[in-house]
Amino acid sequence: DAKTTQPTSMDCAEGRAANLPCNHSTISGNEYVYWYRQIHSQGPQYIIHGLKNNETNEMASLIITEDRKSSTLILPHATLRDTAVYYCIVREIQGAQKLVFGQGTRLTINP
Amino acid sequence: NAGVTQTPKFRILKIGQSMTLQCTQDMNHNYMYWYRQDPGMGLKLIYYSVGAGITDKGEVPNGYNVSRSTTEDFPLRLELAAPSQTSVYFCASSYPATGNGYTFGSGTRLTVV
Image (tube, each protein chain N blue to C red):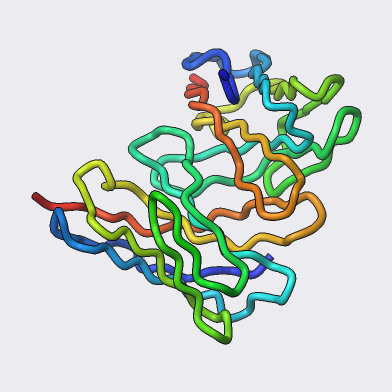
């Protein structure tokens, strides 16, 4: 699985958009980009995923660059409950579809 | 819909003891996974299964065993517990359709003393 690089930590003001970057320069054509988050010590929660097109759901938007070497997760109106560790993961489309977690970005939403 | 259920939530073991962490899912997911998470670290894959009767090692399988006799259950066995196995253990499941995300359980916090 390709590796990802994320900033260790970020801060964002409540009500503003939180933009979390991720670099995955060695991603291959058969790998998706996934985002999960982990609030405190709970189990990780799926947020969104994409292959090459931008994606949006009720939680977030995912912007993938045209060369697919990087992506940005956008939380449009961050709330205090969005404080969590956010993981960017690339995952194979076929096979066992294992997720390989890195250190993630610790996002703190400030009032 | 219960999703992924893990038991127990907390456990303290003495060095050398054994135990089984239970994981059950009611979503008819074929794929199941066990991860461990040490303090301040990301999750590491211990074992995974792509269906009943099929299991395989992940990144950190030493000291653990698994079995998958049914689609619903994927227990993780610790033999001869060691302090290095103090961690939070997460079970997850997914459906092998392209792109589906994992559903995680709430975790088992294990301390070996």
